[in-house]
Image 1 (cartoon, helix red, strand yellow):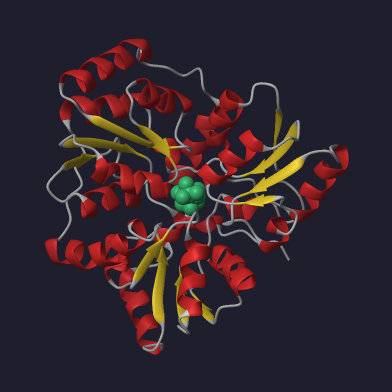
Image 2 (cartoon, protein in one colour):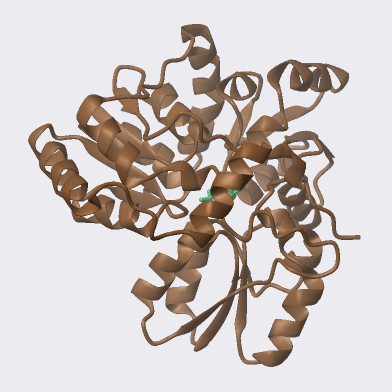
Length: 345
Ligand code: 13P
Ligand code: SF4
């Protein structure tokens, strides 16, 4: 049965999120003025912008125009420490800013908002995760980057969807047994592909969990020549229909190289900005979130990614609001598992 984990999203946030989807004309300020000021300050103060593919296309565009980094979460993690800038503004969700801080503790890392979390992070509290790890002391603890710094500090490895398969395959080849957290769908995908011995935490992404097998099959019938791109946080019934399963960067790269003229995409809508920009001659379709058991509360848009706006990006750039600050011991421990990820390949 296809289920949803949407109850992890606070009701007040869902209400605002729906307003974001359906009421885009509601502007109380002149965005163009803010955008020009962001560009001026970033250049003058040599600030480095890092933004995720799910953020507002306007944020992605500004980041590109200022030679910042727009990418998936692995590249975002690497970009922060590789940059020479002392001030970095990370647009995305909180774990992305925390990762940048852990890998560059001497830099000032600010975010448009610190309220942008992630259902995977919310669904895996460090104290409960610690107890789970204690049940399996003989297992290598591999956690997804979409977790708190405290959870990363408990892990042996951090991975993102772009290298999770290779890391688990590598550990499996060394005869290691895995404890995986928190995304059960990504975990199942890796387990199926590698046949590694894995026990799993029961977490899910509220956005990807809503993609529906039956709806996708109907869309494929309408466009039998289309290729299917799926982020591995989606349920296995959706992953099974994919031509390409991968991180946001991997999906974008696949779309560029694909000979198909039509592509159906199961991930957050924010990615369409890059897909359309890079492939003006191709047609892209959103994978359906409606069908039996559908709530369409997220409607392929991460409510937390959507909390990043031009207004709060301007505030972060101008006033350095929302600086990331973490406990030194937690950072020290989390850096070990994160460094394994960034140095893996
Ligand atoms: P990527 O690493 O593929 O960008 O994924 C991050 C994420 O949060 C997906 O929901
Ligand atoms: Fe987390 Fe899902 Fe949002 Fe990605 S899309 S940040 S996994 S809630």
